[in-house]
Length: 262
Ligand SMILES: NC(=O)C1=CN([C@@H]2O[C@H](COP(=O)(O)OP(=O)(O)OC[C@H]3O[C@@H](n4cnc5c(N)ncnc54)[C@H](OP(=O)(O)O)[C@@H]3O)[C@@H](O)[C@H]2O)C=CC1
Ligand SMILES: O=C(O)[C@@H]1CCC=N1
Image 1: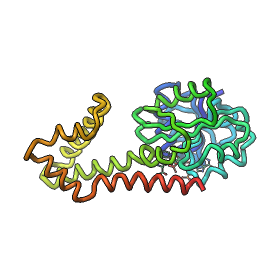
Image 2 (image 1 turned 180 degrees about the vertical axis):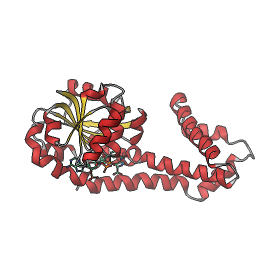
Image 3 (image 1 turned 90 degrees about the horizontal axis):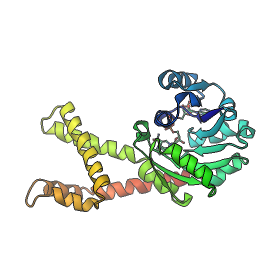
Image 4 (image 1 turned 30 degrees about the vertical axis):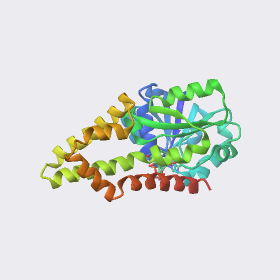
């Protein structure tokens, strides 16, 4: 019996497997995907077990992680829904509610998680909701997911905003970093110099927030020397509606997550 079975070896599935292999032996993980080459890739790269059969993955695993796209959920689960009996199923599908999952896999325990791709390096942000308050299952799942990064239990009603904030959030940050890099290049730095400086600036700022617990506006003010460079840049960002754009991005992704749940 494998500890974890994962269906859907795409971007998120790969990040999850890489992250989990920090906590459990890779040989305790079995994966499947509709594309045999994805399974072969995962077996080769992460030394996990692989199968062409979703059913085999489910039947031979204690915990099953679903990492297919929301549109593929029914075709993935319906043909094998009997195999989920007695299993703990962790769905990472955006917008798909616990009741909807329960309806498809009646005799299983449903967990809804919203991770993100930094799980690949063990620095993910993972929102999680449970179908009920079973202490044993909660402890086991939170311990397992903690290998992917920081786990935050939320009421399922807030899962859409978790998706909009941290599920999709890495993409917003990558776009911001791209802008920093291009700003450096515009000023004459090479791509590599700009990338090195931009990535460390974001990493350092995030680490400062994490370790000081300070409000971002306090730390932002500490950078803004009176009459200096930063306040001119911040004024420009305000003129361009930077913060409004970020808030709207989270709102849009949250809205889309709600649409996916219909
Ligand atoms: N990417 C991210 O940052 C995050 C994604 N998620 C969620 O994770 C899920 C996967 O997303 P992502 O990894 O980006 O998507 P991908 O398309 O990269 O991965 C999904 C994989 O599942 C395969 N698949 C489709 N149908 C089946 C099936 N019936 N049986 C087995 N495998 C199947 C797909 O094959 P094919 O391509 O041929 O369809 C694909 O290889 C989504 O529900 C998404 O909402 C959650 C948080 C973050
Ligand atoms: O874009 C998506 O739908 C998935 C869910 C959150 C991040 N990626």
